[in-house]
Image 1 (cartoon, helix red, strand yellow):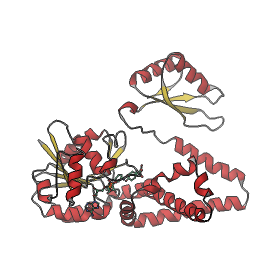
Image 2: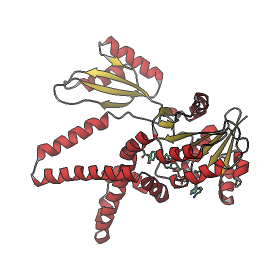
Image 3: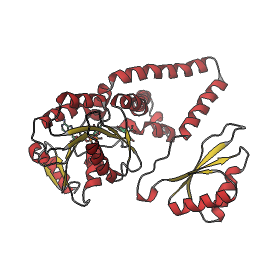
Image 4: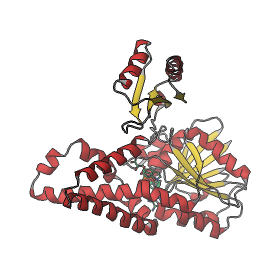
Length: 363
Ligand SMILES: NC(=O)c1ccc[n+]([C@@H]2O[C@H](COP(=O)([O-])OP(=O)(O)OC[C@H]3O[C@@H](n4cnc5c(N)ncnc54)[C@H](O)[C@@H]3O)[C@@H](O)[C@H]2O)c1
Ligand SMILES: O=C(O)C(=O)C[C@]1(C(=O)O)C=C[C@@H](O)C=C1
């Protein structure tokens, strides 16, 4: 029997619990200091058992997942270091920053357990166990940060367990993680919140701002509704990285100020062109059983009607496309199309048809 203890059965802890619960030979135990939360975990059936006792949760546990706010991770590690743990037990976390928790674990020199930091790059603006879902991590990157003391055997045991999440596991150094995730996750959260607050101030004198706010505003501000405590902890913890990133952000804002002051239309167009190019190169990651990713890339010459030709070819043979993306669209340069399919059979049929028409296809 594999016992998994989860501390903090909220959005992320609850979603992990749902990935593991019911799997052969697995028992999932949830912990909270609050008896009402313990009852809720049981009522919602996200865990097999729940308790307010830390000792009971970790007794004989093979894996311990710390899914509490970043500001509480060190306190939990210190508590665990003083409890009897099963020999070889793996402690991991899901915190959105990795350097400080890794440093804390290495200072503590856990006796019988191995700490391997983790961070699934998936989430929502909603929090709590009510928002948990077993599909949350599917096709998402999941960072793991073993260090030089981590036995290969322990790392492999954790990666094997995490296969149930259907995430893509990737090893990243904790400091590099905080730099990169600061830029692609933490900075966007600050920008979204600052933007909403700017508009909310205008709205105080005229509700038309709120009434007219449409798709653009909603798209860029979804994450402004994220949990204040979770994000307070993340930003304070990654403070140094964030201060540097905000300086660079000010430069980006200043660039637009200069472009507008000098009526530089071409410069503005160039900003949108380069942004669109990078954004369309981001891999699409769809979640859910029915929306697994089956993608191919097709080299295409730059001439009008090429997308129509390809969609017609596939449509005529009843191949269902779920999405089509232009990766490179600069004039005179060969580009690529990313074609997405809902299942493997349609993807295979598309590859066969495209190759027959002499297109270069990359799978
Ligand atoms: N929300 C996201 O998109 C996301 C994505 C990846 C990782 N994370 C990380 O996952 C962790 C959990 O975030 P979440 O989004 O699941 O939040 P959440 O609020 O949904 O869950 C947090 C859990 O921790 C418990 N908790 C809160 N304060 C506590 C305290 N002081 N002591 C003990 N338990 C406490 C809560 O009861 C809850 O069960 C955080 O470290 C966060 O950085 C979040
Ligand atoms: O999709 C969202 O709502 C998220 O905020 C998820 C998100 C992100 O910024 O991408 C947020 C925090 C995490 O630590 C990882 C992922």
